[in-house]
Image 1 (cartoon, each protein chain N blue to C red):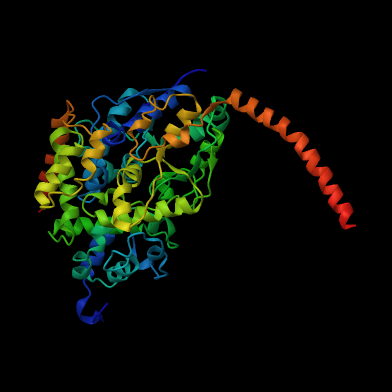
Image 2 (spheres, chains in turn cyan, purple):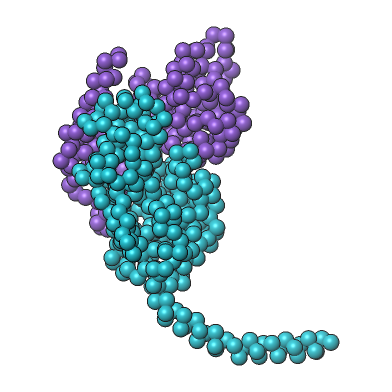
Length: 326
Length: 188
């Protein structure tokens, strides 16, 4: 397979609280033939706080990074964190739409940004550029016990004019990717509900109440765990799950796994390589049953053989009963 | 909400200011309530987002800028996505918050403090230093034990850095802050 090169902006969370997202995503993308180049000396995107100050200022903090990428000649920037991605997309949107906005932003920068970089989520690149067939091709292991609620969070696909990917109300890219790696995906009604976002610190109780709803809904739809694509969703649902239980009197014990970790497990990477040990709510009990595809098939075939005579017997029994009723 | 005397209290300049700064036209809103119906934060707002839109149409500057709603909005974009009139409601909320901040009206002090602490960290190191932001927020807010239960968990799982990651170009990032402050002062 020829390697495709993309720019890659990890973002501050992926260096810290979400390092398992970074670790697993890099492995999975490599497996899918994608090589990554990080913008040299990248800075924080500004995230939610910057756009509460001023839109030109927020766009400038983002555009500093986009300008660094632009210099490398790469046009697509994989941005795993939806918050960073939305900041980049909004800067790009504002600067392409209005020449005066672009000028104002560039006045704050050392080196002007020419608007030549498109930020995309890792999900979008995997779904659109790699494709589901290639995603399925690499599967080496079966995860029979994983029953997942795919959780997209609020801004991965919204607002649609700026996100430009998947459906804003019922996104399906993660559902399809997880299905392609052989995992059972639940129909999850809260896939785009907000988890409480960055308010965990100043408004803890409110965030606990909001995540409680997400966790309850996942449980109600029969999921054993939740797959996420956002460091903030993961943190609010996983790191704060104990808090939720204490605040709401619940007893959730639902692992919150990055979709890239699920893919990595299906591709045969060890839980250690995928940094599964960084999850606060352990997913060990769900991945213990992981078996190589070949072995799984053999077991299935053996079971099918065993079942055959039984079904025949059942068939004859049924015949007799119908005769009896006659 | 109390009755409002529109003959006396409409601030037309404010309506124009918000229109100009947000690039949105609030008069398109016909109060269907779709934004409020989908707003995850509406139970915490003092005025639901559709009421903020109505208050804006009627130029109720003080009520809006002193509201808690504009600070509790997380920009989750549900309202913008669902507005049948294609108003970017979340962008209007963001603009209102920016104006409130500029005028020194902060109804949710902890939220603003958290944002400011985050930005300070970014200005200092070029990247956000998670542990520094949390400790600094706790000290400044007086909520000394906020999130203290999470610390051992995050540390135990190796999820948090003790020391900040400093980028080489942190002065370049700080310059963006300084140029912006200068620009604001010039306009004042």
